[in-house]
Amino acid sequence: AAKASRSATPSPVMEQEYSDVQQAAHDELVRKVHKKQRHRSRTPPSRLGFEPIAVQEPEEYEEATGCRLVDLDLFNEHITRRLPCPNCESTALFCRAADEYRAGLGGSLGFWCVDCQDVTLKLPLSGQVKQAAAGSSRAPPGPGIADANLRLVLGAAQIGAGETQMAQLFGTLNVPVVRGTTWAAVEDRVTPAVMKAAEASRAAARHEEKLAAFDRGTLLDPDGKVPITAEYDMCWAKRSSGKAYNSLEGSGSALGAVTGKVLVSRVMKKDCDLCKKGICDGGAKCNKNYRRSSGGMESEAGGGCSWSSHR
Image 1 (cartoon, rainbow, N blue to C red):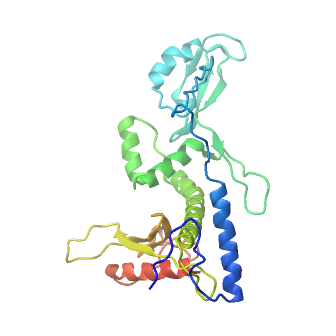
Image 2: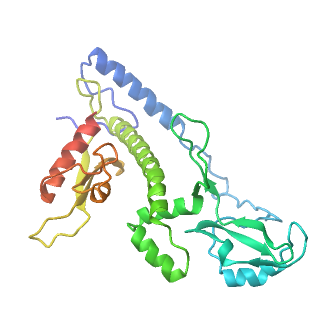
């Protein structure tokens, strides 16, 4: 059999009678490949063989941004004692523990004025993220979710930690822990956003893999689609001893043979946190989607990945 051409575009030497559906798909794919090639960087090389280093003048004033952990003892010593009261302008402010609102990395500090005998200044420790209810353009009442707590829950998920591990860490750092209700509310906000971003990333990877396979000379199937080759593997949340396969969770992923990017992934779970608490109605929020042996998760997830990719 003749070896497929690996030029920039599919070789016209390959003789294949296309149907109307295949021809339309072929023309569309050629257009997309050419469009992708036109968007490649075509910066001409320098005459001297290297690019001159652009000298950037430093900005005269640049504010520090981001999130910091601050020792309140040092804060009171260097800041609170020098803050003027917004009412009487005296420097008699005092940061009392009773005036502090604790909410993990969020919350606020209240400053009591000795002369005014009242809390005259409040300092929020984080920005607030509010979300309007479904079908409404107005944000719900209340302080909302602290931006720092939202980042905390997202970061904990990235390293495989949860509420208990973060509470232990915060206890060691002498930082207020995030309450369970706050953590659950943040998770409800973070999880859909993460799933949406992950699916968008996988869809972009599938499109890139399809164009790369077509660019390498892969022939279209009768439906006008580009067959792609993928590598599939499964991992479990609990390491097996070689005899016992009893992990409650596993994740399978299919990687493109050309790009090496994740095309499709599927998580199999045998339990649900909401079901354990007795507050799950078995609807969309229920995470339980597998009931058989843990060893069978690999084939089950692989079949789902293949079906999702073909779809």
